[in-house]
Length: 381
Image (spheres, rainbow, N blue to C red):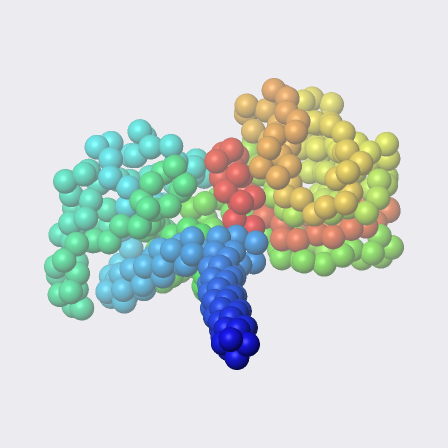
C-alpha cells in the first residue's frame, strides 16, 4: 500500500512537472509570437514614417515625379528638331474650352506673355491640335507617341500640370515636382532657374522669363553683421515697375538700424528696401516713394527670432503685402512705382550698418505672386 501511495505521489509530481514544462513551452511560444509581432510593427512604423513624413506616401509622390521627368525627357527628345511655337506663350496640359485658359485659376504672367489651352477633345492629340502646338506625326522618333502625356495630377489646384513655354530664342518643357528626392536630384540640378521645377529644352532661361523671375541668388549662409554683404543686379527688373515680389528664407539675429535688402544708391522717393527688423522690432517694407504710398510697416514678434521662416514681400496695384510662412501678416491698399536706373540691390547691409542673421535663397519677380503660389513655395521648401 505504501509503495502504491509513493508511486502515486511520484506520478503526480511528474505530471505536475510535465504541466509546468508544457506551460513554459506555451509561454515561450507566446513570447516568440509577441517578438515577431513587435518586429513587424517596428518595420511598419519605420516604413510609414521616415524623415518626419509618411514614407509610403512619399514613395507614391516620387512615382509621380518620376513619371513627370520621363514624360518631359521623352517629349524633349522628339522636339529637339523643331523650332519654337509662336513666342511669349505658355502652353499647358490642362484642358479648357477657353483657348486663353481664362476659366482656370492660374498664376499671373508677366506683361507680354499669355497662356494657351486646348479643349477636352483635343488636348492629348499629337497632330498639332493638342496642348503642345506641334504636329508630332511629322517628326522622327514620334512613332511611340500615341497621345500627348499630361501630368499625373493635372490640376490647377496644386499647379501640377505640364507647360511648354516658347520664347523668341527657344523653348522649355517644365513641371512642378513634389518629392524630396527629385526636388534635390532633378529640379535642383537640371540647370534651370526654378528649384521647384524640372526644366528641359533648348533654352532654360525661357521659364524664368515666362514666370517673371527677374533675379535670384542662393546664399544659405549667415551674414556676420560687421562687413559681410552681397549684391544682385537689377537688369531683369521691369522699369518703371508697378509690381514686384521678393521672396526669401531668413532668420535675423537682432533688431538694428539697417536693411536686409536695399537698392543702392538709396532714395526715399525711389526705393527698394526691407528693414528686417528695425530697432523696436519693426518690419518696414519700402517700394517706390515711401511718402506716397510706398511703405508698409508691421511688428516683428519676439518668438520669430528663434526660427528660420519663409518671407514674401509684395507691392502691386492692389496694395502692399507681407507674408510669413504662407500667411499674410500685414497689408495695405497703397502702392508706388520704382525706377531702377543704375541701381544695384545690396544684400546684408543698409548703409552704413550691416545686417546679421541667416539668409537662404532670394528670388525677385516682375509680378505679384498669388496666395496659392506663396503657400506652395512655403510648403515645398
